[in-house]
Image (cartoon, rainbow, N blue to C red; front, side, top):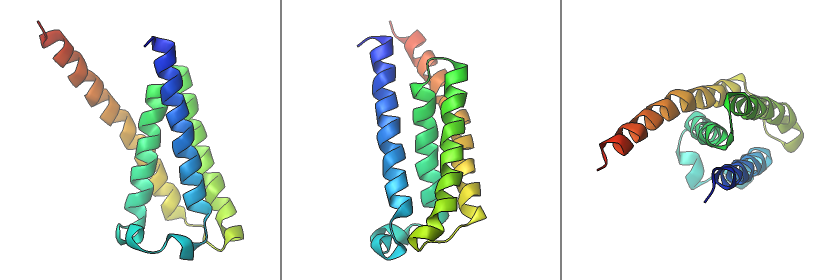
Length: 125
């Protein structure tokens, strides 16, 4: 698989996750209450946006495109929060903070993963 086709696959995955987050965030609260709500709401936000951040970093071909995707992810999360009251949900600054924290956490995670991967590659015979 070539570099560009791998990046396109990561971008398609980023887009699917973004759509999934959007649908899950805009469903009426009653539709998502249940086993999924046993995990703390802010942990769900953090985890979803950390995954989205990782996919943003994997999708980008260079630093600029990675930052662009991370920015789109953050702005999209704010837009979702603004739209939520129209679907019977509530706007929460804490959700935006959890989303931002997840996106931010993805950066050092990917740096650690990248360094570990390079070390592993160099140790192969």
